[in-house]
Image 1: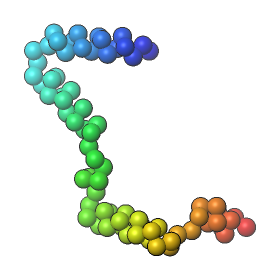
Image 2 (image 1 turned 180 degrees about the vertical axis):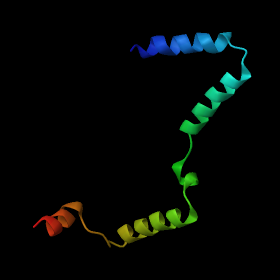
Image 3 (image 1 turned 30 degrees about the horizontal axis):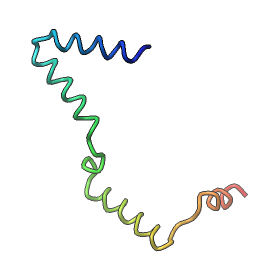
Image 4 (image 1 turned 90 degrees about the horizontal axis):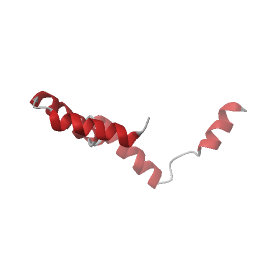
Length: 73
């Protein structure tokens, strides 16, 4: 697939359309790409992530390799 060709074809179709619903749909696609996942999280999820970061800052974590060794051996 030639990405430049595909983009060019889409631009031609966009220029030719007068269908506002198509234009709005395309705008929504681009807006959804820019969403910050943080805004989609619940307050509880945000708290858990922030608490995890605080634990890391305090050195309260286990290295992945150490964790694996503990459960494999």
